[in-house]
Amino acid sequence: MTRLKAPSALPELVKSAFAKACSDGHVHYYPSQATILYANDIPFQVRFSPALANKPKPAIKDHANPRKFFDPFADPPAALRVTTLSSLHYLVLNKFAVVPEHFILATTEFKPQTHVLEEADLEATLACIQAYEAAKGADERPGRHDGDTANDSGLFAFFNCGDHSGASQPHRHIQLLPIAGMKDGLAADGVWSVLADTLTSRSAPFATFAAKISLDMPAQDLHAVYLRLYRQACRAVAAHARETPIDEVTVEDEAEAAGEARISYNMALTKDTLVVCPRLAEGAVILGEDGAVLGTLSLNGTLLAGTALVKNEVEWEALKKDPEGLLQVLKRIGVTDEVVHGNLVRL
Ligand code: B4P
Image (cartoon, rainbow, N blue to C red; front, side, top):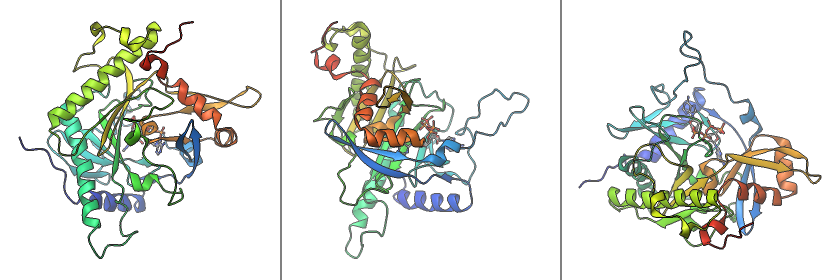
């Protein structure tokens, strides 16, 4: 069976669409600064973008029915469109970018964000990742120099599903971040790299289920890997609720392979790894030294890259002053490792 391919010039298409949309005022690009904080031994990138706090609210299109939600992926303006991938999916620029060239894979027809992903969704995502990898190879040709392109590090794809995942738009979409842009503001020889790629061999402060994948694997196999990890995540949430180790959760708790997802979760896909992270909360409070609540840190699927975004200066300063605060948040937004590894201490 032939696999879906994205245009080989995809990185260039995204780059030129982003540059034009920024200069014409169609994309809001929010500058940010970043620092590395250690959560256990994981170098976590915390990014501060105060301007994002003033992000414009979506315009109401239907004045007769102002409470009807505005769907940014129903009919995006031509200035934001990057390309059509197939009859099922198209690519659009993120109108509110913190990372340069942030773009989004959306379904052509409305499909719910809260449904289990279909094989075609993952196939289309992998096709985008593959196009960036192929361009990377091309950029390594003799005569190219560092700085010629921002495509040297590939793509990080993430998906937010459910109330506790950081999702806000109900039209199904998977977000794509050029990894080179995610390094903006960090030292070139820095210690940060995409967390997802390490999660098959290390654990995070929150439970994750990860598997190695390859760029040339059949879409059916990729989907089977996703379903296996998603089901493990469902069992982890059931185990958490019952205060029992995951091994004691029976197969009756197996989730359906289609339709409404049973849990909130984030998914990440890179050229090597697929990760599913069950979520119990969108965020958690940041406490000051005196125990006062200084703010709330909310996290979406960029968590699986090992990143967090802060819009408020008090929260930014508090996290930098006491990185333990970040670890405490990370421990509270998902299932604990004790549930997954079976050494749960019953109270
Ligand atoms: P969702 O899954 O629904 O939610 P989200 O990523 O958390 O985005 P949200 O909009 O809630 O963003 P927030 O202010 O917290 O994704 C919706 C996507 O569609 C978003 O990317 C959104 O920007 C985009 N979108 C909305 N309206 C649009 C329109 N009219 N046209 C095109 N695209 C539209 O955060 C703001 C931005 O920062 C988001 O892009 C978010 O993904 C990004 N971000 C969050 N954490 C980050 C991190 N650690 N590093 C870098 N960027 C990060």
